[in-house]
Length: 122
Image (cartoon, rainbow, N blue to C red):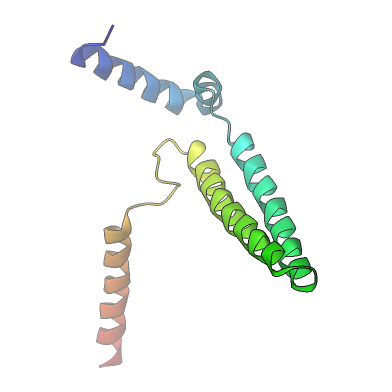
């Protein structure tokens, strides 16, 4: 049975209040622990090293092994980056990885610094 808009809004408010009051309990209740994502990132790092070994070893044994090693390295790198990003955002209640704003806000700060630097040079 679906919740009404009012019930959904109240549930969201309760979740936000719980996360603000006790983030560790909120993560436990959600079942999200960033230890698992970090562990996945470590496994991906080991996979990357295995792929590197296959790549280098394949140069001496058979070129197909080098191709397999490269594919393993690429897949491990992608999975590692995804896991690392998820571990950074899992503990952050704002959901943006602890950054203060999006790309437009960052560009605004860069432009401000650029203009200040231009003003100081004249």
